[in-house]
Length: 286
Image 1 (cartoon, rainbow, N blue to C red):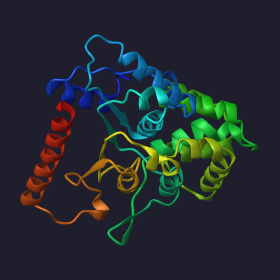
Image 2: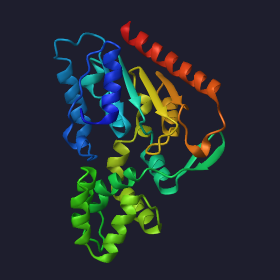
Image 3: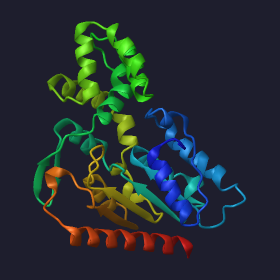
Image 4: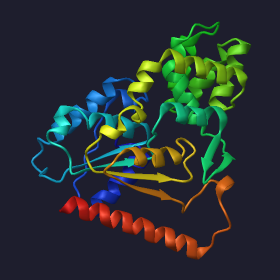
């Protein structure tokens, strides 16, 4: 919510452009808990937003990263569909849980008919284990490890070390691999089992299964340097939302896919971004 650096940056940008900005507090999502109820919370927050005296006919709703998929799903609810926002802005959102998790498992990304290996951000593995590790049947103390991961998410590093010292050696090794994002065979196997067991929830939250039903104008942005959700997810999202606009920003790229591009390239990228946002603001003012 209001303490998230990305939300602060985007909120300030929209405020400086003359918009009133409201940051909803969605309890589970603030704690990185992935459940179907998050979608209902987005609908509820939008319903409350429309009651505010400063809101007229040009409300814009914005979703970041995994929250973006929840927002897109919420847009299909009758409460939003019957009184829709002017547009949706999706930033760094995934298209398919399967392809997003495949990236975490393999580190592979396909771009312009070439395949690259990129180290995924360890945060993704932490979130997966925090949400779903307790659904498995293993020899580990899943409840204790889940509590440890909760403290890591809350940046309680001293508590993390304290809890880690209470674990047996095998559990400590597993936790160290999770926290560092080390994708060995055991981590891969556990993630694959979690995906299979929680398939219904993951499919419900995966735009791949319903993106083509979204009617609201959707602006999609993704940075090429995103190691949490690969930017190729947004290209797939744009391909499957009929009324959409896409901007992939290559101002900051993955080192593995970057070429020796100088000032002229960066200038062209900046112009692309300016044009995209000029159209975004113009569309929402009409």
